[in-house]
Image (cartoon, rainbow, N blue to C red; front, top):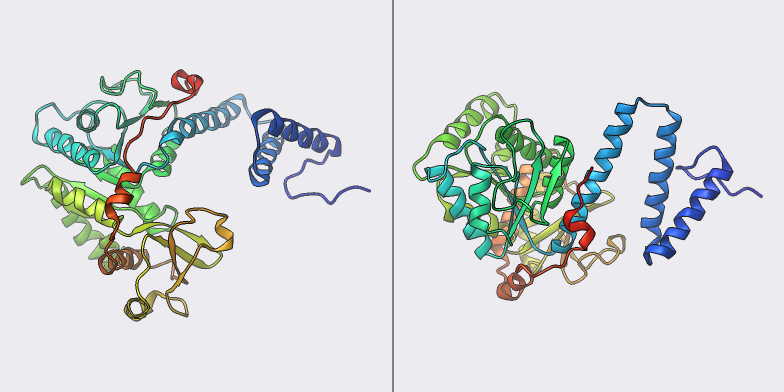
Length: 379
């Protein structure tokens, strides 16, 4: 009797059996893997063979192959530091050492590392080098893009095991988004604006988890202040964004304010995910019943029926962050700006009594990368 055909199967039962045997053998060779991981691996093999069946050009094959290898390599490099929060810093590669913008980026990175964070940059010169110099080599990641000009890895991160070289912008951007818990933007050109608007777009549309985004000017500077005026006049003024979308970012010329904006966001809030149509907010300390009732009333306009309820981990979360409390709600996904305001309110009304203990959990620790990961290039 033939088994029922799965969604990701080839037409050939013989090939399907060979794939199943290969995955089973790999599980035994590489150590225990859960059933979900094995199934994803099987589906990736099926997809690769279907791609072969499609008879793409060599260029298409090269693109897909390189993208997978780049993403895998980046995930391996970041994996030992998964428990440490990271801020991505963007800005011009042309900013000169000692200028106000350079010094501001350097001071910002120093302050974030003192708060227990690590710093990710594009690994180039200018603002990127300033931020990595402030963070120091041990607390820095570099995600470098190979360009014919203007983008060699800076001396702070060059040769480090935490430097990843990318051929494609899109795989590099995936790595930035995947591993960032906050984004800081300093004055820059097209690339900086691209990163800023893309981050805001991903957050606004719910394609990225909510995270703080700060635009940092030099003291007394007006680069991002003028940008904000443009956004208010031409985007908000023409109703191309909603007033609540303005809560998705902050413009400041103060390093202290930029750091506070980021660290306050994680004062009580930890992370979130959707389980079906329910949004699950993971928090260190759940608000009281009366505080939850007040929050439900305050944000009733964006709740899709019901109230905000306290909960333990849901069965669908499969043991993810088991020590955290949960707030469960049905949320209007078109109201992302209001979600940011809700998280801010949760952080305000539930002080973190054990902040020192939790901060210690995010301190940078020595992590030994596998020798093969230290020098492996995603070729």
